[in-house]
Length: 573
Image (cartoon, rainbow, N blue to C red; front, side, top):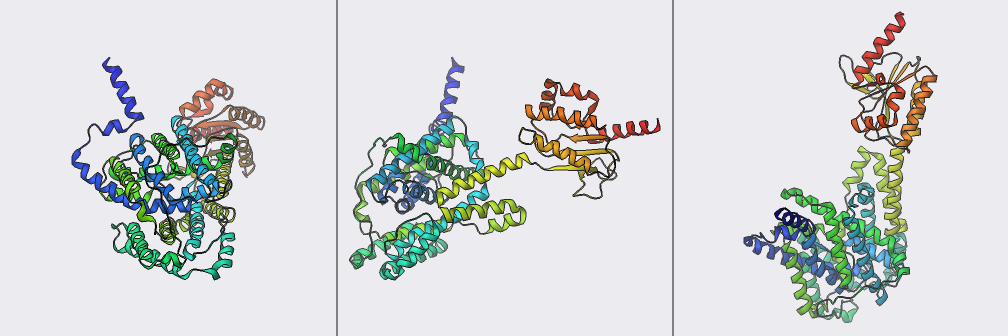
């Protein structure tokens, strides 16, 4: 009975990590968690409203998207500091996806954004339950860097209309937006532009001078007071206007199969992107504090947060690096800080939304522009260019695709390109002809180390990959090419199998064919360093008997020594 209760507790702790830390909570940490929660809350309020505007939604949607998910994540999450809520990248993708189906500003648009949050959450929950977190590996870092850099440009361009105080039709294609900006620049509201530039400069100065201060809150407070005192809204400065008072109420998202089918590609994209954002941030801060996060459990946690965001009038959310950093530096030691964060937003929704009436859209645009500018990493392209030009080209390809076609198409086509390159890499792995370093038992690629020694008539060959149906034919071709490239006849062909971790049925059939072909040419086929799982598979298929047990060696030097002696004996005879 005791074992049964222990098993149940361990499983409950796995599903609900809050049960692992809350019962033993150290109340001496309560003050720090509360302070961190309130600090991040004051930062999130203007940020959430700004990101909602970026997503094409009313500013209040950003607060709805933040409040309930912040209370849900601590129940399922394994990170102590991760702060979830609206972020720039997901907001851009929402605008890209939902904007194709409905006009920004319409009631239908908000309804679809709510549905999208629900869909993203369900997808992430299913991925977590079925342990599919590995799928994010198909989005390579160069791809994400290229997409992010282009997305920063698109996001910044989308906010120019709020800085200029003009109406510019939105688009995910950067060049189209630029042309529309130039066509409307003559209609600039100079008061709005001055206010927006002042907000940007103030955010930058505070970020450098007083990084611990709530710069976004200070900027929106000052700009709101300026608009109110000088009645700038009567001079054409656009303001947020009426913001609903009260907490969000749960509503079931609109579920129409035809709409779900149309939104599924963008939902999958956001589900993967938002998970990648969250897990990368969570792992970074967990490593610094000496604990680990569970990748698949994080999928469940972020999925649950997104699902509830959809139930409470929000839109897709993710982990925020800037807010997580503030959370950590403010002293947060447990996920309880997120609960205080949510309570700060709840109190704001109950009592302070009338204060947002005179908040200028230009200030919110400034917050978005300054926040996303920090996402650009100019050093990464240069680093990739130096160490691996193929990855550099993926970055450039992703960057240009996103700029030309838009965020949605850019990330999807970039992911396809990455998968194609992965398949190509598997299908055409690196191969090498090996030689021995003089005076040692170390073997190196003769193309890289020209001082290596080869035994005449014996060819030592290595393939740097497991053998699958995708590369079996390539292996066979490369073996024949290697033999043909030798100036003297090859009598023994030795495959160094140290890099072969797995082998499938198609590859084994190819090995049978290769052994017979080489035998017909008077060439013996040998293997060295065969790993146990591969050896077991070869034995099950009878390949070891077909080739002969004496054709397998533990090490390269064993094979060369034995075959050299055999060669010398046959020559003497």
